[in-house]
Length: 470
Image (cartoon, rainbow, N blue to C red; front, top):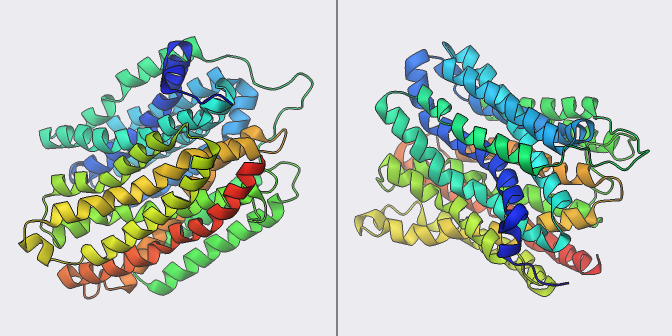
């Protein structure tokens, strides 16, 4: 197979289609970081501090719901209409957020944004498989995943400017012009027909299993709000229990949430999804990085924010570096990438608690390498995991398999976010808290979560062998 080049993906109509798919992910991703930046200002203006965490909870839950329903949306409406409807739902939520007089209205808007954004994410992966030749898939995956790196740079900057000006509502209105350009691209570049062979029955949505999945995430998220470890553990146990029920029911169901073979690591598709989930869990430690940098090393919020963004920047760089490589190189990166991420997390566990680094004015330099390394390791193998899912999808279940990438990733992030809080609190983040508590939490958090990419190193061997046989 001829090696794909970036010019093939980014030139002519392929370039416009790539821009449309990447733009959908960018719209969702940049909004995530804009809201994270302006939320303190929002709470000061309209109140609702007690519901602060629910902005993330409802957004993630709705995103999971949207991504799981994206195959049905594309089957029912066709790629163009499904994309336009999801953008419309996202923009409706954005307008509601911009006009919110209270936290209740803001939460409603965030739920709409999450649902529309979740459908956009699912469609972007699915349409990459449909619109581009197989040899361009890894390049397309690198471009799409790279949008999260762009978002970590653009989102905080946009949100920070408007928050500093005292006009946080303008941050939401700022999203509308780029969305209008995206709508034009979708209308002109995407096919309006549903990608379904003639005579094939319409796809049904597994609404019952999607509801259980949402309940699983909510149970974990609600329990994580408690300061009691017992409630945290109970919430995770209930969430994982519901996840087990979903897997049991879905394995032989006629209407599936995930394709055949997704629930067994003996199957190549199951291993690929497991790698996606574990890598997504591993990087959830980034939530605590700004706090550690400010409290332990005395960085300003702006510097801490951009140092934290190095993880996502590394992910983007790794994706672009590794895409389009030969099968032999891809198999090597599937092992090397997770190992690099694991080693980088362990290094952070050693270096982050060392306040003496700050005294030598070298803390930034010492921490830059492992911060980049965590994301770089994921990026080096991510496009090949995505391509592997595309190639391993059972016949007739391709759309479910590609949307399943987003569903698995978001579910893993939700679980990982809760586990980070549990590990940090158990290590002393809140008791004793303060400087000592942050140091103890940093050691525990990075070392424990290094186990996630370490497991991927083990699983990647089987993935590589199976990929060679595809």
